[in-house]
Image (cartoon, rainbow, N blue to C red; front, side, top):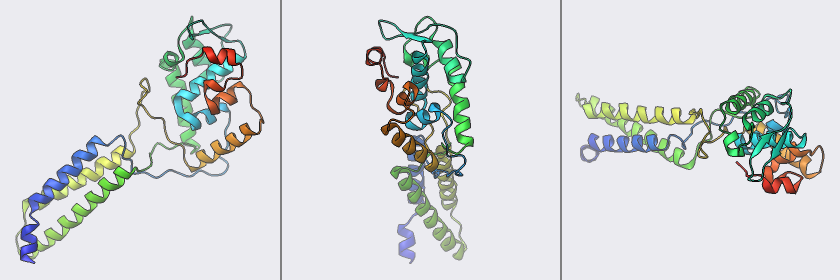
Length: 259
């Protein structure tokens, strides 16, 4: 046993804990430890096309759906270069459409409209509502890399506990073992923080929207079934599921640039 513990030097545990910690820092945006929440049946009902749009493709799809709704009512028009401009009075509601109409102004590409502070604020409000209704989760599902890092951190922690018990039995406490505990605890904390990390802006394409919960995925599947059956499929509903390419007027759809 002495030979085994001598080979299993605390410094090796420190190296392992440090490596896992560094990998966790690099992967904080991808390795998420939380499970998706479920929702009561009463909450798992879409209120409008914007719920479906967010569940289908997140924040960009919400903006595209608002553009489709405003185009269908003549409150926006498409320019020769694919820009979208306000045409007519702003809508009375909902807030997303009001923000898109305001941002479009004299003409902007859809991707630039999505970057508007007013549009971002309106989508954050929608996002908060979806979270409260448990259709999306602020926690992200664990990836395979996250499982691996967490498993390694737990193994290192277990070995550190065994080494600590061994050293205490010999009336000798190695400071390096305590360092292993600190580093491994920090690693597990970083993984937890990564699972709850929410990006505040979505100006770049790399930013992810909140993932649907199990209830949200069910709502989306039901909306897709209804769309396939042609029930309640106006321009906004079609774009919510299929993006701007699904806009029924192909002449207009051809001139639009997806976000």
